[in-house]
Length: 313
Image (cartoon, rainbow, N blue to C red):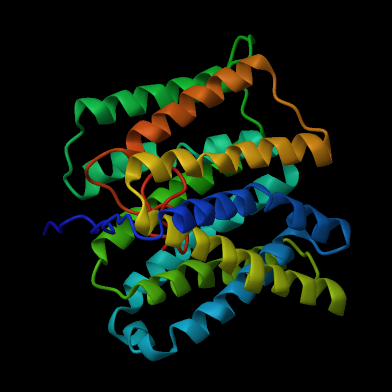
């Protein structure tokens, strides 16, 4: 049984300036998201527990927002659980990559998610790959090869790079599920996207023997980051992408990479070489081309968007 793709919001000229500002704020917050993650770990809160608590804080806000739609949890438990699982894996892998790897590299490897989304849409939804889609695939995958092949005899992928790739693949799987579940209320999909990471991250921490340090300040701060920062960067992106055309929102959202690279260089002393930048440009170009596709889904927990960072529902 085939389903029509997830309907895109209709762009409007009303509040154009507000939409642009909202997107810039959201992209900047995503670019700086690595900082509270590392700060919490430096304060003694292990990365997995930091991720669990941040997403728990966001999920609590989502639960309040979706309180009138909770009946859908009983009507479609498997669909909600599937979105929670893949989105939780994406959020956990991405966050751990931010903590333990180079911020810009992890973000760039995550930006391969439109590639996986198109391939999965072809495999599971029966969508055809157009010439434009194939161009996007070649650009993005070529960029990944350039970044992973720095002159040695074989590809070199760092653990954090792998986390970025896993996050992008899991995010693409979330996109496909959301497009299948277009009948689910947005607030339920957002709640599901946020609710998976606390279980996955906390469960992984327990299996690995990482004890939760009973520091009330660190725990409260992690919850606050989720309730304020996570929800703010989700809502601002959602506001922007519902009011702007794809060609504009996709370009503005790339500012996340700029914010991430500059903030990591400024605050953490991280710098990428020329070959990494070249690969990054190719990946971003592929993501932008993919974002202009006439058919598409969503891209990051809590936002219904188009393009690389669009659509975290």
